[in-house]
Image 1: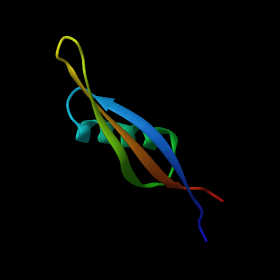
Image 2 (image 1 turned 135 degrees about the vertical axis):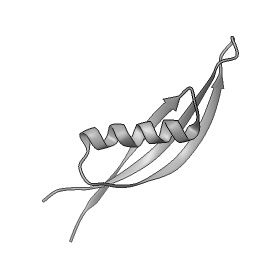
Image 3 (image 1 turned 135 degrees about the horizontal axis):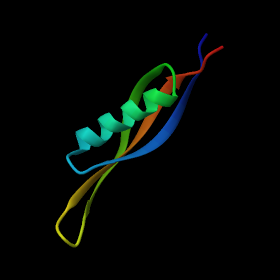
Image 4 (image 1 turned 90 degrees about the vertical axis):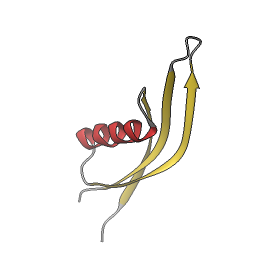
Length: 67
């Protein structure tokens, strides 16, 4: 039997939602072992006064706990 845990991460990118999600998963894999999946909970775009765009994705990362 295995037990999994879900952790929520907020990821940002100046390029795209896909890039923000990819960076979030890559960062999670540096700290968490046995990352199995991620679910995109929310996406949001912030537009700066100078017109810059920042993509934000909140993701739920599932990883298996070790014995």
